[in-house]
Length: 593
Image (cartoon, rainbow, N blue to C red):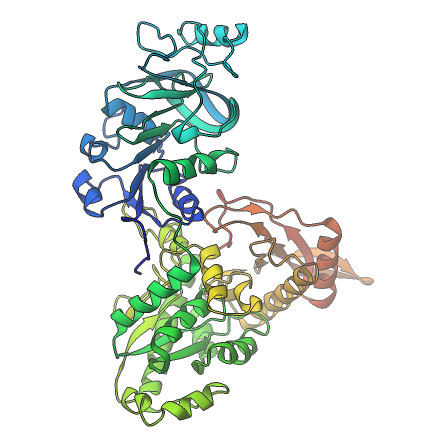
């Protein structure tokens, strides 16, 4: 995927093993500046070869003193590129540049108060102790309070007055105190020479600093998390004020660049797209359709694991909007046969990924042998092109496969150096090694909300753009146990009821998705009518999220939950119990399998 940068280069987030490295990249993109994540094992030379417009050093679980801890090369800080260190990145910067880093007198984990002011080596510097530590800050230019002086004494720092100097640079516009999110047991106790100290907390004498001449900045706290309310402001100060970057990365620029990139990659070759009806594949297909038009054939594989009404919606809505050629390939019997007796979730994902590609290869062979019948309104456009492009296209083999792979798919499938595989996605980790196609993945480095914005830019209707995310393996991974036709009917109907009620309640844009999970090998006793039942439980998993990297359970109204449960137990006779999953991610993934 080629990205429109409009600045000198990307903002590179150097991942030191942080839980939130992807979130940092997300926050940069929210500022309309493109960012990428690179591993800490890259040398300074490799990083600088990417011509970054700015660099952000992420947090991480290590200590700068530990043997084998991720190393920061001084060359990276001496190249003139603006650099922001966060948490471990902040400590590593201080350590490399000659500051002092030591075990904190008080570890800080969670919400913390930070006192802001400015201190440094100039004439307005606050007093420092023999070790170079900074005096405790008070707000509003007044002398430090007795409590803050005492706090300074607890840190081994002298009491003293603040400079009264207005905050500039990284924390410009910040109040004298703010709530921040911390996670550290090691602290910077003295800033390197040339740095102004901007903030202090109970456990971090130097909680933020900057050297605006060398354009080096650091924060002990995590500005990327929502628990730091002013965190995004600090990031944008770094990006806009200090690095001088322009917020030019927009849905329109992404579409323009991706259309050009697809044309460069594909040339005159024919392309087949795996259309599932979900947001990702629909947006990917619409991008490719805009780029190469009649060279694209969309194939909708009905693997028998679809939601209620899914196939009919694709046949009706997608073709009407895009005018793309569409082949519907019914492979449901094949998938069910391959999944017979399989209960391991990873095995199910691998099987579905394998059969998915095989089904595509069959459809591609058929498409190469005969021209598929055009579906209105594609028919009129197809007739216009019949004597030109399509005549030559039909003689060419299909070379490329379009997939709606997203960045979280890549991350969870271990698509980065040192990344652990959480689960295989059929778009990435589940692909067979002998696949016959080259992949076109125009969304590979985008998050879901960015994909939705691109879809709207392409003119796709809200009913398509704002559909709940649905995994490629479909209902096959929403059945805990063996996948059978009868079990699919149970979960399909229950899922249809849930989606219908959420839409009726106006919640489609408020929740991320609500998987309905059938615990197929579990039964519980119930009473319906005057008789005893021995039915299945289903689990509702409503979650709220920005990008699926993290999620929290949605706080749905009890009356709505009661209505959903009543409808499911009343309309799906095999189900006699509805339960609610209130686990966040982490520790639980959104899908159960």
